[in-house]
Structure formats: C-alpha cells, structure tokens
Length: 79
Image (cartoon, rainbow, N blue to C red; front, side):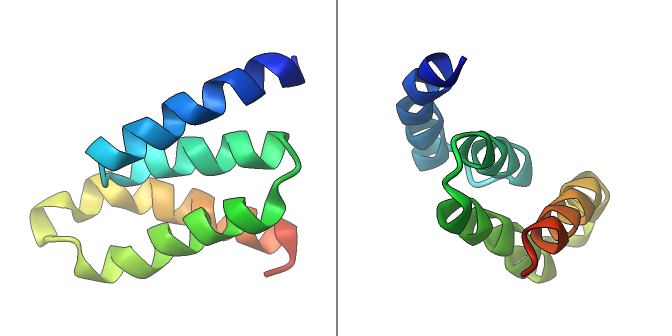
C-alpha cells in the first residue's frame, strides 16, 4: 500500500499547484502522514489553519470542517 501512496504523492503535489482550497491541502497532508512524513504534513495542516482567517465570508462554511480536521491532526502530532 505504501508504494501506491508514494506513487500518488506527485499527483497531489501537482494538484496543489492548481488549487489552494483546504480540502486538497488536507488530502495531501493526510497522504504525507500515511507516508510518515510528519513535518511536511504539519506544514500543510498549519497552512489550512493559518489561511482560514483570510477566507472570504461566503467560503467560511466550506472551509470550517477542514480547519477542524487540520487542528485535530496537529494535536495528534503534538503541535
């Protein structure tokens, strides 16, 4: 399974060059966690939390669940 996940990593990385939404950022962080790349994952999770303050009001509802998930993942990582 790790081989398949490692193969998916460049695809997620490319996706993030085209999308700055919280959901694909979280998906990449989750993938990195599964690959035991905790530092990189934490950086993506922090990005979600930090950028949440700058999201327009009409998108806040869409972003809120991903911010909660990101914060929970950071807590699990002890950060």
